[in-house]
Image (cartoon, rainbow, N blue to C red; front, top):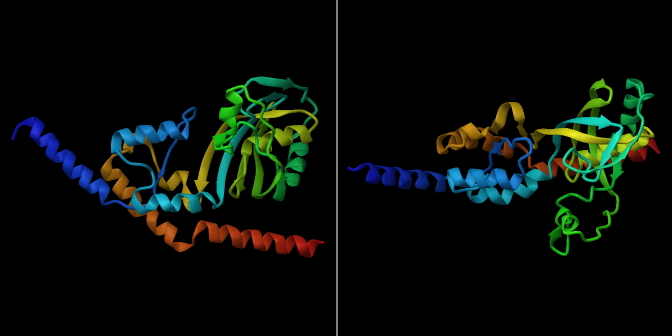
Length: 255
């Protein structure tokens, strides 16, 4: 057969294999790349999305599960987006802040807390993302504070003005808002410089993430084989509801 025919046959076989897949797997999104851009690159390689077949219906419940982040923040500087991509809106001194001050403040942001989402976010008004409306020049009011869950919050390192945090939280939580609020609580200001999600539901960065150099059909097949059994153990949304109920019970007992 000619080279063109061989490639066509291989392409059909690959497409058939891809269409036989169903489930979820985790991919790595590089810094500075949006989720949409990462998915577009994945589609270009696989002609599919991260959730394949029936797996797309499982994405919403997965995103409701617990997640972990490592965040690097900078004291003394605030931006309109609460991270390094935005415009600096405020600068304040931070010289007096000690490691002990930081650790004491972190305790106030652990457990069930109220949090105001950042204006630059994926939340919507009239069907459009707030971040899109802001970029269009429209006046956007911050969403009301809402209850969120922080399971653990620890200070990994502090080298003024930089601090590194490990955060485990529930769905709907914004690390950018957390760092911004920590800065205010310290009578200064702060913004996020780097943010890495290290866990989403049962998927961890170390064990389950598929990096871009392995976005091939064979690697996706292996990743699905590894990841799907994890989802059968306990639905993330169910686990989250149980944890929230336990937390509420504990708070009631404390009162």
